Image 1 (cartoon, helix red, strand yellow):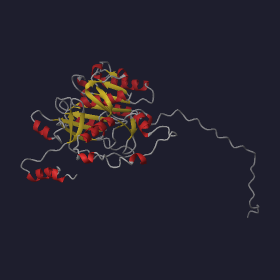
Image 2 (cartoon, rainbow, N blue to C red):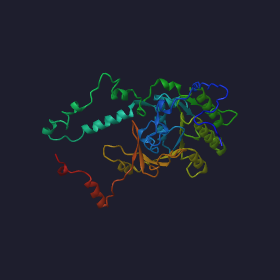
Image 3 (tube, rainbow, N blue to C red):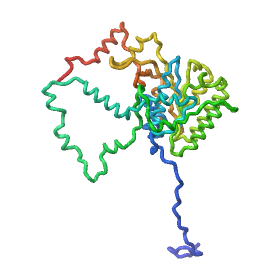
Image 4 (cartoon, rainbow, N blue to C red):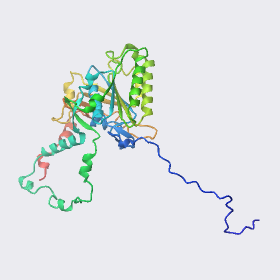
Amino acid sequence: MSFRKRNVGLSPGAARKAPISSPSQPAAASPSPESLPGVRPSPDDGRPTTSTGSRSLDNLLAGHAGLPMGKILLIEENGTTDFASALLRYYAAEGIVQEHKVHVVGIGEQWGRTLPALIGPADAVDEKKVDRRKAEKMKIAWRYERLGEFGTGIAPARAPVATPESPASQADVASKQKAFCHAFDLTKRLAHPALSTVNYVPLAPSREPIFVSVLKKLVSSISACPPNTVHRILIPSLLNPAIYPPDCSQPEHLLQFIHSLRALLSSSAQHITAMITLPLSLYPRSSGLVRWVELLCDGVIELCPFPHSSDALATSGAATAHEEPPQGMLKTHKLPVLHERGGGSDQNIGEDWAFTLSRRKFEIKPFSLPPAEGDNEAQQAANSSIPKKSDLAF
């Protein structure tokens, strides 16, 4: 039993002074992904994403509204057309406008001179289209036009007044924020100071395999840039005999290169994305080599152009008479859905999508056929969805 008095502290022993914890100096950390130009968090799971340069393609990528950083997107194309190059040009032009470091493999500077010209932010272009559609709507009776819109007389009194203490209004803040996606015009050519900084990686013959030298050049170029630089790797027409030598199509060379490319993107997952195009007319999807390449890529999209004899089918795919008919179908075989934290959505896989390449833009939209001529019920349902004059109440 202890007879020590209560409320008496133990002997402190030798006098010791507590060490003063000096604040540790934080190391030079890399900037957050949100602070990088042209990068924003995904609305689905928050991972950093960047735009492909096409608003419709961004909306197709598993709900991320862009291409997640550290991912590879493979675009396959059937036939002898070259629609996939338009998406590559959008991807490269978006990177140049956002001042990203663009690396083009296997093609020279003449390809960079064909990039589409910048129109402006995609949001501003879409707002102009909406305003134009509103202006084309049917006008109401003249006596109602004089009244104006509902609540226009009392809206200014209820609207918040900008005080001089506020640093800037919301419009000023929105204007200062850099756009995430831009709109481009394929009929014009891009003129930008960053166009001269594009890194063209040639397929020069050497003692080592072609893909090994290409990977070394990519690694050296990426390591020479500042750590907060965003990189975009473009590989147009992979395994095209007009560009690549015959031994590049061997699995031991190609698959090793794709593995090494994935390792490069994983080492800097918040700063690098890649886009590859592959001609299926030379290397069909039924071959084991293409299947392995699809497994190694994070997203796989196939472009199936319509043949010239199916003009009626292409015309019927347009939703309205004012829209341009699609040039082919777009199939989504794989999307960057899952990663170590989960997230993403594969609802676009298996849906009927069509793509339209006009003189000015590349657009992806849902594909639907009109009712057949013998299907009277479907035609009546389609006609009933159109409002009649008697149904319009003024």
